[in-house]
Image (spheres, rainbow, N blue to C red):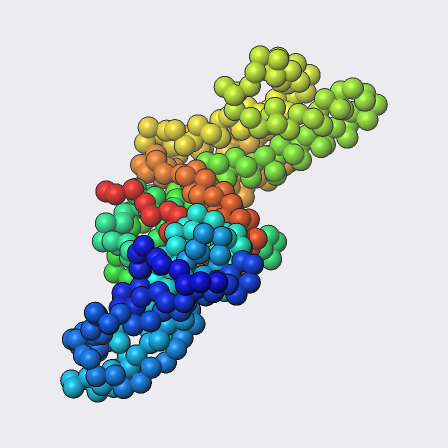
Amino acid sequence: MPDATFPWTGWEGFLPGHFSRLSASACLIQLQPDPSYTPHCSGCLQACSLIHDVNVRRIRDRDLFEYRTWLEVPVRRLRCPRCGVRREALSWLSVYSRLTERLRQQAEALCKLLPLKQVASLTGLHWHTLKVIDKTRLERDLVPPDLSQVRYLMMDEFALFKGHRYASVAVDAETRQVLWVGEGRSRAAVRPFFEWLGPHCEHIEAVAMDMNSAMDLEVQAHCPNARVVYDLFHVIAKFGREVVDRVRVDQANELRHDKAARKRVKRSRWLLLRNPENLKEDQRNELDALLKLNQPLLVIYLMKEKLKELWFARNQRAARWRWTRWLNLARESGIKPLTHFAIKLAPYAAGIAASADFPLNTSVLEGMNNRIKVIKRMAYGFRDNDYFFMKIKAAFPGIPR
């Protein structure tokens, strides 16, 4: 193929020479030094025309039309009077790199939007090369949070490998910035976060979480001025699993002789757990009919609604009064799953009452966890947890104060 004349050059200090096809989808451009350009020493960045030797390197550049583009570059080593023998400085090619800066920047931009597998297909680069590029970008661009401004935290866990490995995440409740992510959910796994906070632990006023005793104990150990606030969603979800489901199953078992009523009770889980304002007219009528015919289900439904009211008290005194009343009603109900749940919930009463002074919850964090799952699914999982955790921090940079 005859040599091509290029209307521009993206290779400072060099001109395109011979163009050849390596295959149906790849081409090679052989560069030659530009006689009008004086190379510069990579040490002192001063011009130097004394050539020590030349090393021809083959590197990848961005695709040229439909071709994967390779360059043959005669990289010179200069005999600099100040620095000695040094490689010439090339603005478009890093030392030891086999990719041009232009291709690296394209890969960085694509990795922000697409999984590595798809970027590898688009660029023809190996996924491990792309991971190194993206991880280097994250290490460069991630800005350390200003811990001196952090007053309120949200903490939760998410599954790395469901049922086997978990990770914990801490978020600034005001800016919604992910501050820290670490593998594990035990006290030992969470402790590095508070050690990283250091003296800033004294500034923490409240921490919202589920009823995770490991996180609770670490907050008490490291943050002397912090109040633990238990999230409404997690408590009600636990009530649904341990009380509503148990009573519903017991009532269904008592109705073996009446198949229609038994079927109605077995299918009532979402009617009993859903907020009344979210029910449609036919669902509301169905729920009313169910509760009129079944006293235990009516009791636990009303107790669930009363339990929610604890998070909407005007102050802690009102919240504690509501809690005492709810606890007494649960004990007097005669429903074993409800009584057992109330006894287990009693140690967490102070954290529930604290929501009156600190109206925090982890609903935003639960939404973040869903997005974290999407990031993990798009990548078909991550082998490198450090890289995964940096991707999470980059996805939630927070709202400026």
